[in-house]
Amino acid sequence: MKTLIAANWKMNGDLSWAQKPEVFRQVFKVEQESVDILICPPAYLIPSLVAASKSLDISIGAQDCHFATGGAFTGEMSASMMADAGAKYVIVGHSERRALFGESDEVVAKKAAAVNDTGMIPIICVGENRGQREAGQADEIVGAQLIGSLPENTYPATLIIAYEPVWAIGTGLIPTLEDIASMHDHIRGILGTLFGENKASTVPILYGGSVKPSNAKEILALSDVNGALIGGASLDMDSLAAIAKCAP
Ligand code: 13P
Image: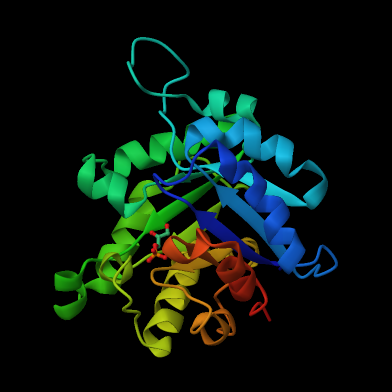
């Protein structure tokens, strides 16, 4: 499986950032074929980024969508609108959406299903908070979130999971490599129970939370880590390229 390096720009950027894919390619050459690059900008930048990255072999994704196909949902955008704008992936269930906007597993599962319905791939985020990790509940919490956030009738070819411990996001802290490996193994095991081992082995599981050029190599070298979802360090193209260069 190719390593997926996914940038989550969160609520950062402006129209001039449409030039960033080209800047990225100047430092990270197209020939490096073992890596897929995905940039998820704020929704209003998706069409500009899609146009600017067409010949650069970089995919563009969205950070969220509504689960309904349309209607009276002021301020929201549907999955098909994201697809129409040119997105190929949609992040759903990011911990910031769960914590700041009250999104439940059930809502995340509906969003993931809506993303699948348009032919795009949902990146479903799961992760424990600090208290849960310290109480030894991380496996249990993440397992329950995962099962609750999967759309019904999904099958693994249409799915990416991102393990993002909440306490590692934007803090500079990361779990030990053993803890990352163990959680990815746990997630793979749950997918195996649901879909069978063979199919589960094809689901990319990304790690996210304070990934930087200085720690990316050892994280991406772990056997069940198939890529990274990167926030802060993805805003600078030198830093994003340095992380992509760490792919095994
Ligand atoms: P940071 O890389 O800034 O910790 O953010 C991670 C994240 O939330 C990616 O979705």
